[in-house]
Image (cartoon, rainbow, N blue to C red; front, side, top):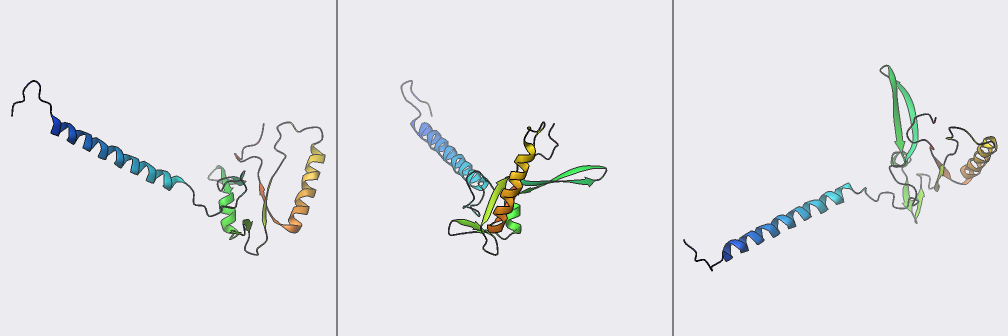
Length: 148
């Protein structure tokens, strides 16, 4: 089939644009499905805003095959161990005691002059919190390496 100089490929253009739209729509659907899969489930939707399920609570150093291995525990893992859940907008453990979070102090390379008073104040605060709540302490050193 021979086209004259003024004739255009209307059916081919239509098919091209239809195919382009299908490809773009398909990739948009795939990207939205991948984005939804990456979002963590709202299992602990009542967590405080500054605490996330992947926040490190504790780092343990374990001797392992001639070296040291760091084992990190996250807020989500700790809450799973405690069988925690949201109840009336508050996070509670299996005994229905409210859970509170406390970020520990004391990761100083060169401690301040009044560090003993700061640490004593923190001990008193934790003691008082534990009387009313289940307390999850969040390490001040999530990397596990000694501050220098």
